[in-house]
Image (tube, rainbow, N blue to C red; front, side, top):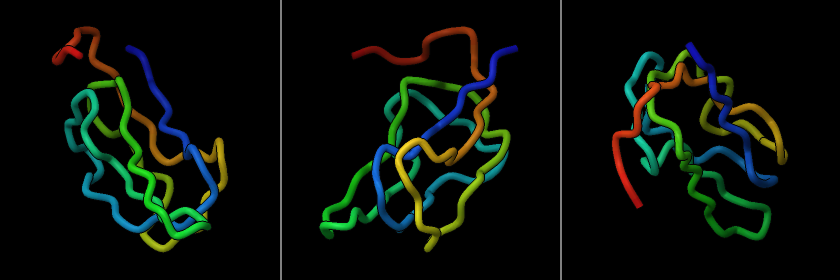
Length: 82
């Protein structure tokens, strides 16, 4: 069993979290939307697939680069392709 970590790529506020605890996620699915300090939006995606173990932030929270957004229990198989 492997655990992945989703990290914030930028400074900003969490605008939207379309995933829920225990949800199944797939590669390149939109997981978080962050409004950066310059007003632009950053979509957080990942190359992981699996099950959300915990979401560490809430909508409206201020985040910094490297801050943990969520933990994912990874699948051991690839479900999509580039």
